[in-house]
Amino acid sequence: MEDYVITISRTFGSGGKRIAKQLADKLGIRYYNKGIKNLKGGKVDIRNLLSEGAGDTIEPEKDFEYDKELFDKQAQVINLLADSESCIIVGRCADYVLAGRPNVFSFFIDAPKEFRVKNIAKRMKCSEEDAEKYEAISDKYRKDFYEAYTGQVFGDPDNYDMCFDASLMDPDQIEEAILDYVINKLDEAE
Image 1: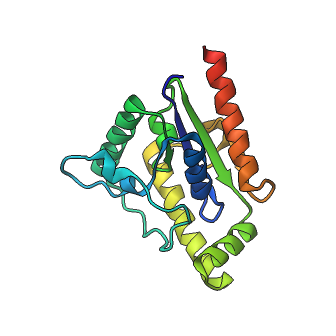
Image 2 (image 1 turned 30 degrees about the vertical axis):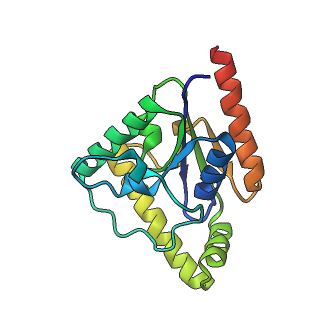
């Protein structure tokens, strides 16, 4: 089977990052998330890009600051990864960066705010009031980041192969749907 890349975008508290990690484990491929986000100048070592853990971020994102140079470096690394291996890339506008490439499959995972707030409170062991603040900060950052660098609307179904509502499907069902879609599309291409 040829190399392929799965990109997963998600709202905070939807469980998208955890789904990506579990799917990567099932497929026996690498999962990239925070390492790409934290790139700063210098030589890139792909081993430093691997993400650890599968829970939602404990600290909410900071205010978005436009940094074209950093985004270009992240895009360069995303393209390098896509050229070199099968993997899952979470966030960082990977769906946009890799758009039009064969064997790239993009998914968006969301859920209603109430569901996500409860999920965040449970994972972060905080009040729902604090979880709602984290949700607002993180999702504003993700929306601002995505829209600033892509010129597209964050979460627009037209940007993805499939979108999921995590309140209607459990994580295993979402993983299976993604896996079935990718396998079917790769089989069609052969």
